Image 1: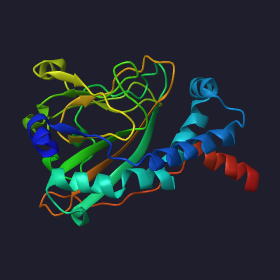
Image 2: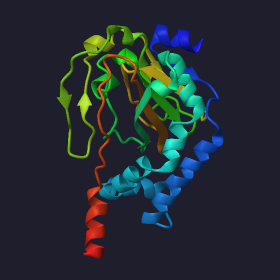
Image 3: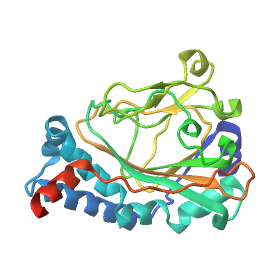
Length: 254
């Protein structure tokens, strides 16, 4: 069922795939890192930290992306098995990039991506059909808190040519796909619970929803790429230190 949905629609939802312990462990990392900056932090403090001290929030965000528990969540055996099924190759033939935790605050659209394909950002395969996007909500997601919106069946277009747009230094790069393309497809807003995993083709057109709730939306993600295909592009993952932490440590130790 999941493979047929993926082939036809460009995405599928695996229900109850993730062990809740993996989610709780990552929450523990998140709480610990926020506590490092403010021992008495609350949900409101998190919102204010991003609004008033974006560099500090960025340091917390960057630290989470390197944490052990983002790796154990996104690279667990159940996720690898499902990705292997959809990409039709054993896990030993897969490369993994971009394990991450998105933290989208209420009504904060600075890092929300408009309509796009991940194949425009992740170039490990020249063909988007040889890669997959994995989206792991850490709690219930729906239209209210800005769940993923997908153009159903749009993966069949293949990779499209797009231009880059960037609103500001602290916003995400945008490789937008025009409304003229997206309006041709049925647009589906994904609903999922903690423990579910959404997987979509690298060529599936999708966008971030708007978080209209009063709480942060936490969603983990990773991409897998086939290494056993002739279009695979190898490369290195380069560490880029967070400038806030780098300068803080320099002032303390120099």
